[in-house]
Image (cartoon, rainbow, N blue to C red; front, side, top):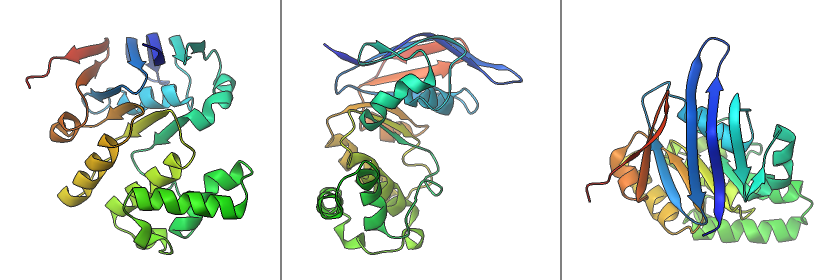
Length: 220
């Protein structure tokens, strides 16, 4: 089966410490995996490495079997990668929901009418069409997460990288996120500390430690 993501003995360090080393991971086409670990273990940093936002210290990163030697190499694959940060409050670029969801397509040169139509389709698919003209900063945390996800999905990425997508959300909002992600057939790496959430989404879970990734055997 074709792989979307390959990491080979990847390591990362800050100016003050080594965060992790020897991370090897293969994510196949439309496969969903989760990564757990203690605070400070580098889960968010690992996602950012896959997204091409920061550079690993050592090791190799491949997207669709193409090696990403420098951060510039990721440019060709930007539209294939959908990265949802843990805190989406700084993620928005426009005041209203519809404008923000349209933004990625408009930035790629799509016409306004085409972008508007596709944005409405995505909002409808995610069950938030009623939020079309709302101010983003008047929304709940759960609604903001789904709007941010809509802004990613409109470009039809092949890979989703989700950093704590249900952090600080109530049960209803979490269930909506679960239903949405279960309906999406894409390669995903999900970072979360919430076991019930990841058990509802993925068959494969890894624990990140300073010495690499360890696969966790599911009990179900």
